[in-house]
Every structure is written in structure tokens, then in C-alpha cells.
Image (cartoon, rainbow, N blue to C red; front, side):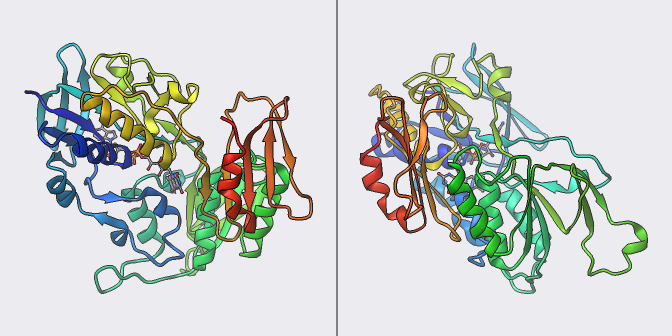
Length: 405
Ligand SMILES: Cc1cc2nc3c(=O)[nH]c(=O)nc-3n(C[C@H](O)[C@H](O)[C@H](O)COP(=O)(O)OP(=O)(O)OC[C@H]3O[C@@H](n4cnc5c(N)ncnc54)[C@H](O)[C@@H]3O)c2cc1C
């Protein structure tokens, strides 16, 4: 019998296998991934600096142990470069070796890719983004050279320019500033997390991160990144890069981190003829437009979420459970509960339960004195979302109960 094949060894891929193995211990499973397959919690990438954790220390379970425990055949460092739904097979390459593998069922857990905007300048190639452990290795050791012992590094305070004041940009700003780096954030909007938070909550975060030393450049974008002029490079302590902003300012930088968002990776699926829009389109059973082919995780666009992508941990846990049951023979529709997201900005802890973007309504501050609770009310006065900041984040459960989906 052809195996169940899962493409991707991120949270979506591994969680699906783990849930599936609770229900079915005999069906052969093959996991194919272009990375190492090591298991790590991706959210820890944006709070590792302050905790002084090296990239190596973020691996919670090595790939071989995952494969052994879950009884799967793991094809790591292997790229799937084609899916043939007519013959139920995938084509892979690993170095010079190409292979065609048949599947009985196929799961696409291929994640998302960082959005890239054009940046001019002779060092535009040095703009980095962090969406995987491999990315984090490069970013981390670019700032802090390896020490003499395994897992050790030499901390040096660096100038870091972050493009984007969204969720990931703000988390990195907090983490890097707390670790002792000099952080400047550039964003075309007027405040942090402008798309997610009511204005006063965004301003609270702006102030809290400002207290940590984060410098904000709103209403601006990064236009160009260049290496410092040769005449200046004699002083090796000077930052190596200059960052030109659209407002005419020039910032010194040792590193430029782009955190302007992610886009579902639909390349493989759409080349195979699967329906894709903002993500790989899946129905309530996580089935794509092709029979026996399923998708979940950052790459999927969920019917169960009003055709949204949901690039967060909790939706993956829910989706993996439902999909595992379906794959094990009990067709199970995915029903999302309310899933508030905790934003990892310890300078100002925040919990957000966002309403569907198409939901009409407005933010209402609950208590002007406490400045820490905003409810999103629809035109009938029904609560559809909320934001909690600071000490109010302890009211998460209470507010979740008061919110209607
Ligand atoms: C810095 C950061 C912090 C975050 N913090 C939080 C948080 O605090 N809370 C929260 O809820 N969410 C957070 N998220 C989001 C959350 O981590 C993601 O939603 C989740 O990890 C995505 O998992 P995934 O398995 O869908 O994708 P990925 O982890 O991207 O995995 C995709 C996998 O597919 C493989 N792959 C892709 N294409 C191919 C191919 N063609 N062939 C072979 N293999 C392929 C890749 O190698 C990889 O193994 C954060 C994200 C980031 C980047």
C-alpha cells in the first residue's frame, strides 16, 4: 500500500503525524522536508535573544528521534518539486538524486514565505527575514559570532533596523532591545500593530518599547541598503551598512531584518493544478480541490475560517487533530474555536482575539481608567473580538467567554 505522504516538517507536518499516530499505528507514513526535520517551536525564534538561547538550543527534538518515536520514514533535506495528482505521486530531489514516490493520501504542510519588497542599494541582498530555524541560525550568528565552545557565542551590541511594525517586527524589536541591541523600526503606518490593535493600544506598545530604547520611524519605508562608503570603513566599529529611508533619513545598521509579513506558499500546489487563492484552498475537511490531497498550516486557506489563512499555532493544533481523524477513517470537519493570540512583547504583554476582517463594528474602550481592555462590538452591540494589554491580559478567559464568533 502506498504511504501517507506529508510534505513539510514544521509544526503543521509534525503535529499531524503525532495526532495521526494516536489513532493509527500501522499505516506507513513518509515525511518529506527540505529542512533538517528537527522539531522546534517557531514562536521561540522571536524571544530567544533575551533568553540567551542559541539556535541549537531551540531544537526540542532532533529529527531522527521524531522519526523513530512516530514511526515515520523521514526524507530530510529533500525538496518536493512536483505533484502529479493524476498518478497520485510526488517528485523529489535530494542533491543529484531524483525520485518519484506514490502516495495513498498527501498532506501539504508547506508553510508560508516571507513577503519581499524591492529594496535598492549594493547591499540589498543583506536584508534578512526569519521564518525558519535555518534563517535564525544566519541572523543569530551574523550578530553574535560563535564562541570557542559548542553553543557559545560572543555578544556584541549591534545596530539593527527592522522593516515592519507588525506582530513579528514588534516581537523582534522587544527581544533584540531587551538583549542589549540598538533597534530602529521603520513602518509606513502611524503606529505599531496598526492593522491589529485599536489606536490607544498601539500607542501603549509604542511607548513601552520606546522605554526599552526602540526608535520608531513611522510614515517611512526602507528605500536602499548600501555598504558604508570605503572611506569610512577604516573604523571597524562603525556599522557596515547604511539604510536610506523614504523620508530622507539615513540610519546606520549592522543588520536589516525584514518583518513585513508572510504569504502562504502556494507554488507547489498551484503548479499541480490545485485551487489556490490567498492560500491553498481547503474545505471543512481540509481537502484541497484534488481528491486525497489535504493541506493545513500557514499555507492553507480555510473554509472553516471564512476563507482566511490563519498563520498561528492554535489553528494548526485544531486543524491537525481534525485532519488526523479524517485520515484515520473518521471524516471530521474542522471547527475553529475562538483562538486569542498572545503577542510576545514582554515590555507590554498583549492578547488579541481578532474578528473576521469583513466583520463590521468598532473598538470600544471598556474602562478609560485601566487602559487595558478594548472590545470589538458589531453594529448590534455583540462582542466579536477583544484586545487586552498589560495587567489586563489575565482577563483572557473571561473575555473569550464574552466573545461570539
Ligand atoms: C518569528 C515568529 C514568531 C511566531 N510567534 C508565534 C506566536 O507567538 N504564536 C503563534 O500562534 N504563532 C506564532 N508564529 C506563527 C507560527 O509559528 C506558525 O504559524 C507555524 O509555525 C507555521 O507552521 P507550518 O508547519 O505551517 O509552516 P513551517 O514551519 O513554515 O513549515 C513548513 C515546512 O514545509 C517544508 N517545505 C516547504 N516547501 C517544501 C517543498 N517543496 N519540499 C519539501 N519541504 C517543503 C519546510 O522545509 C518546512 O519544514 C510565529 C512565526 C514566526 C515566524
